[in-house]
Length: 266
Image (spheres, rainbow, N blue to C red):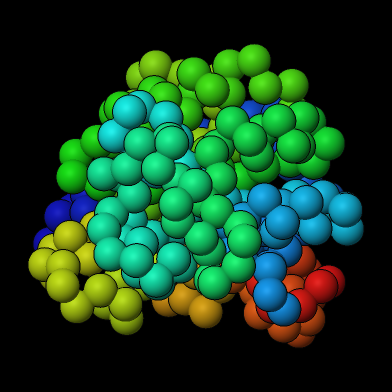
């Protein structure tokens, strides 16, 4: 029985392994990251106005990218368009030209192209790029994002909730800093099977993805020992999302997390 327990512990430790010591991480440190840009007070999330505001205030940004029907990339959080634009449909069904028909939160801002954001930043502040795959397009999405970033002169990393995006990065672009987004799925995803919730909550797919960092829900960061193992034993870096008060921000930074904030300015 003791031997079996030791084997299970060893397998768990190996399952959550991470890559340590990526030389580029130091360029991401020391920044605060505006979640979906610096939005609020009439400035929509993931809009060019929100990204300009973040840049003007000296923040890096976290943003979300989706693959369009014509192979281009759009910056928007949800696949469904109704919450942010008030219109029906999915962003994956749109072409680049059609983005201009979808206004964000009742403003004059429209859904940005990813390349427009890269042109705006042009290395002036670091980017955390979240890959948002839909309907099995994880490989095409990840490849398209990497191609757009090939000549980008600035600092960036890539992350996703979907381990398949990180597997693609590991196999095809191992030089890029990659991160596994996660949270306690038992708290948030009643639609998933329990076994999948367990694997994703405890980062048990890390042996396939070997991430450089774990981006974990701030409110859930103490729910699982796998986080302490990833950051302690395997020396992965930690990113904390989404910090919504100065108190949360100060606590996360004190604990060593890279901070992604929203709703206030640190």
